[in-house]
Amino acid sequence: MTASLLTKIEEVVRSGNCSGCGACLLLDSGLRLELDENGFARPVQREPSAAVPNADATFAASCPGRVVRAQRPLGSDRHPTMGPVVASWRAWAGDPELRRAGSSGGALTALAAWLSETGRAARVIGTAPATDARRTIPIAITSRDQALASAGSRYAPVTGAMPAAGGATIGTPCRISALRAMGPPHDEILLSFLCAGTPSQLATDQLAAELGVTGSADQLRYRGNGWPGRFEVQGADGSGSMSYEQSWGERLGRQVHPRCKICPDGVGESADITAADLWEADDRGYPTFADADGVSALAARTVRGYELVLAAAAAGVLVIHPLRVEHLAAVQPLHEERRQTLAGRLVGALLAGRRVPRYRGFRLVRLALPRWRHSVRAARGTFRRIRQAT
Ligand SMILES: Cc1cc2nc3c(=O)[nH]c(=O)nc-3n(C[C@H](O)[C@H](O)[C@H](O)COP(=O)(O)OP(=O)(O)OC[C@H]3O[C@@H](n4cnc5c(N)ncnc54)[C@H](O)[C@@H]3O)c2cc1C
Ligand code: SF4
Image (cartoon, rainbow, N blue to C red; front, side):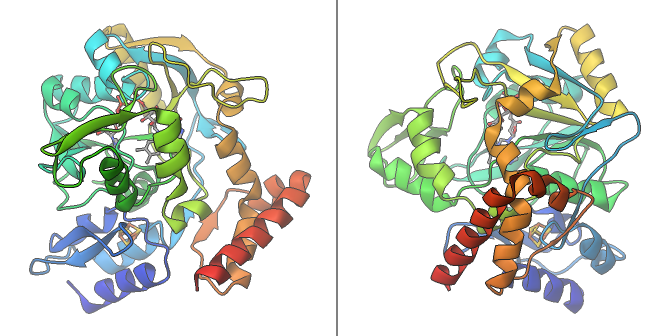
């Protein structure tokens, strides 16, 4: 690896802005993602360096710990908080087994199976449990069975070596924004999901231990087998399960990476297609989490994504019904609020002495103005939290 690529990566890690997305692993095959002492993934050099040409410049223009750009693809309309949309739908997998296994409607699993089995992508990069199922690793999906095995959200950092891309990638919004910024050959078919942040691995390990699994786990699911489904773990020394509200709401969701708290793009704007939970909402717009057959919201961000969704629906891979993007925004209050108060949180972080990435084109100040009191509160809260932590 060139010294300057490693130096640049280390600067991002030191600044606290490395989300552990793993995109830089595509720039040098000597890099791996490993857990740090706080349970978050960060890149380290473990094999002899083999950097691609112009790795430094590509990193500088694409690492989401340095820069994230809002997207305005041809043919899309921009929603202020949900990002660019060509069309959106309520959707689920046409195959009932995939629908049940998925986090919400199994739409991403169905797309991964279809893309790989029809040869639209030689491989789809996704994630799966490691041998110790408390850990999450990247995998290359080449068949329906592999897609099924990788179904469901993994609310934890992904660690290990990154398989070479093969036509499509499913990833967190930060990883997908990096791939889009890298350009060809990395801007393959890009699939993402709404993301409230990546929790620390320590949160998963604590949850497993609370349920009686203190050592390696044979199986661990965060969700699925119903909607939203339960956190389930099984190991040599025990097994147990916990509701989604308790596991995500009270544990995992409270231990997300600090970089995720100042993320401008929890909605996956750089993807071709983004999936989300299409929760039923109460009177205040907050999700009810009542168990039901899973339903995803899908947003096609690009014309390529739009054509893929229509082709998948025509093949019976997806069941789709039109959805107004305003409906999605209404049942995702956290993402609305996050974008509207992000300018405040960035000011708080800067005043507390923290370096923040550059965010381009999100119009954060314009979004913050109508709710400026919330932004001031968010600035104060961020300032206090950072100062207390240092
Ligand atoms: C960290 C995290 C935070 C999330 N936050 C929100 C949120 O705030 N709001 C919301 O509506 N939805 C959120 N989701 C997404 C949601 O949980 C569902 O994944 C989404 O509804 C898509 O459901 P699906 O049934 O179509 O996906 P599935 O059919 O279950 O497919 C999910 C695909 O994503 C891949 N995957 C799972 N975890 C990861 C990961 N950590 N990194 C990369 N790829 C992964 C899997 O390999 C699989 O292929 C989050 C997901 C994650 C992993
Ligand atoms: S944010 Fe992603 S691309 Fe940037 S250093 Fe961290 S892992 Fe690498």
